[in-house]
Image (cartoon, rainbow, N blue to C red; front, side, top):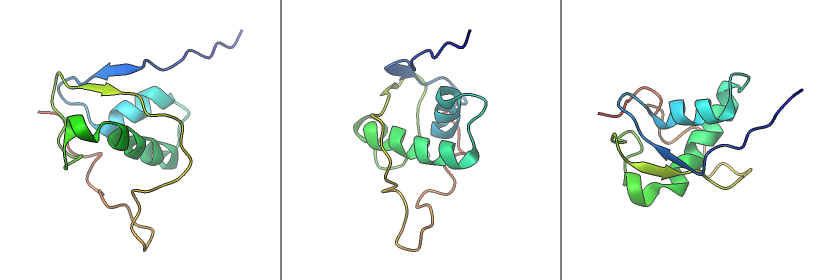
Length: 93
């Protein structure tokens, strides 16, 4: 039997987590890097008021709300490059 469990509506950031790791966990083990890249940007957009202007800095204890399903990629520059290339390397402090 294949069960599709819904992602939690709110995630509490733990030490060492990144938006990349949160998005990857929510998508599951079969997610591609491209899918995770898209998803973490949606997490940032949905939680910008909590996170602030720098998506590289998330703090333990912050409560992030799951983003609505989206298909666009507003995080890309006009050249098609990610505006936040280091996001998956920085961890919560």
